[in-house]
Image 1: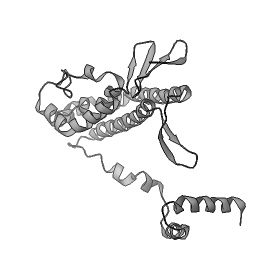
Image 2: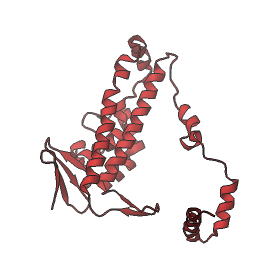
Image 3: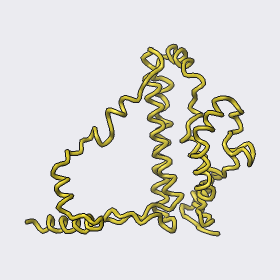
Image 4: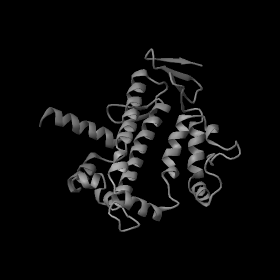
Length: 242
């Protein structure tokens, strides 16, 4: 038997032995299991079933698909913001997750920030799909069928805001943590609060000291140990201070 294969089997034995099960049981399971396909891995059929227009205007499908893609980009952005705010995951080459790192590394920070910039650039550049990619007359008609729905109601957009500034800047008052200053007390706003209050408050508590502030020159990243990590864009370096 090939030496590399023997080493892999030995490593698998150690991995699955930690669960209290013998390796042969898992090899049997692997033998009987079906292959993992692309369409199963990304749940393609489910994904393609989520575009459900409210009217018969053909371009509404473009509208809803574009917004779903936007939300997926928001999810990628939040993933990177989460990584930066918590200093990144410490995952060994074996795949073992040791939790969050204790400090923010400059190379890691720059790489993740560049990812976020690319995601936002793609969102900005793709807006032509909304401007020029739909029939304007159709849009003005089917858009009326979607009221009072609005992209401003995106929970992920709110979470990106929470990561990006002091939470008090997003509130009417300290006793009204959810309502944006421009939302008022509409029925839609009340429904939004009912659906997302717990999620927003959880993120607020998790990231009250784990967010970003950009003043035009420096990006401030405050961690949960109250260390202020300052990235100077002009000098291109990271300065950490209390």
